[in-house]
Image (tube, rainbow, N blue to C red):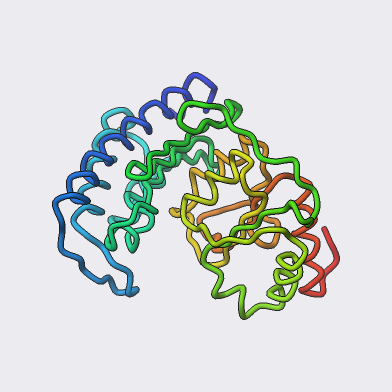
Length: 269
């Protein structure tokens, strides 16, 4: 029998997810200090024993509490069939982990019938832990966070971008350049960093075009609970197939989406 995702259930799920992230942090901490061998996967990205052991540690904690749920991990793929799906990236930013700088994180999210309802973003070596569940607000290191009130591109606007290779070959590239030219600050913080900064109002807009659901699933919940609009680059709901991200406070997100849409020769929805 499927249990509806009421607040009490989501609070429990979020607590278990934080425990799972803590278990992964122990594994990551050990290898970050002790060293490890690096393998190159078929897609030319690195993987280490830490990735595999951290994913296993996360699943042990989650499965003890939710044995009937399904799981989709970066290293082991999709397992099980359920209305409930746990999305797991044990080390998002393995390239940073391999090079020994702390811009990597553990991403754990819970999806119910296609809707992301709870998430934890744990950057253990960076010293930040963010979490949220649907309707419960967003928290970073125990403090409730809120996005900025930005509504337009001005000298006070700060934009951050991550992977944007695909966008650079897209008609929207010039629209993005215009946004940058009208803004006061542009940085490529990338990975979890700019999403955490966005959640607490330190930057105003995040744009990415080459990501996958496991990179950002919990951040959808965290950012929305912090007051942001979080969509794909076309303004659609994030899904298992999403590869592009546009996230920011409602007014600025609407402005950026309208300019991207216009660049494609389309009328705003």
